[in-house]
Length: 415
Image (cartoon, rainbow, N blue to C red):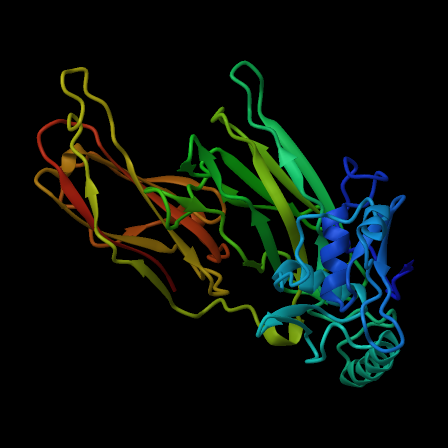
């Protein structure tokens, strides 16, 4: 038997127009119901209906093959002991009014420490107490929204690969943050499936990803970066998450936030967005603009600079640029012109071209086949007086045959 789930808000159940009923995904429905303590669930039209637990606390699941077959939407390949899935757990906790949830010892637990399978009435009482406490602390608006509550889009979406003869492809998704006031920092959690071609992992250097605030201020935070190296087939890359973005300082956070993904290069592989969330962080945690703090973020992993003609016998020769990426998590705003420090070992640095992609997307040539030596620090006036928070990429290219070298170290510095 199935009953309507005692949930306050089912907006966080992933939606997919291709699923049965148009708006309900059977496997997601099953796992979400399971995460909040029900024996399972199935799609009834476009609604997710959770299976009932009987008065003795036993699961009222189908006890015969015939009964099971009558629940046509229940995934047959999901075992009874489904392990805790962090994204499903978080979605389930938010659907019953909690600020979120995570997996602990294989079980789904909501942020206030209670099991996600607690009785719905107890959840309601606990939420009421939590809201009262939050109101007393001044961290909740009149509508009951608390700082730190994520607004999520859990629908799996596909960004189509750019075709060989077509233009740039794009995909736009939106989440709505309830009114809460003026914020300073938002956290973006974004889950993108790894990409591969014929089993070989592929980078994300064809993608550009932008987040736009309700006020229309856009921040492109992914400028065709490769991504972090991962395990598996070498080389491998992963899309970076989470992002703490301070660029909407002292601006209202309530309203529609838009994620725009664009594919610039044909690679033969689509990009799958699993889900994403915008979380407005408590402005009390970020009371001042960190304009005077010193920043000195370095990457000391040595990388080989391949010679121009290496690995290309016979002629013609070709460039073999190397790239390294670094994440600056500190909330630092440059008080003037920041700088880059580069350590290179090479027989003739006049062979080298070095380019930096900054966190704001600026592409800066920091060395262009000069006579050398390369200065220990190079000023970056192009990104003066900007937020340093975000991702940076350095690209080193040997443009003349004759010698190989190494990129020994590079640092982003400010103030």
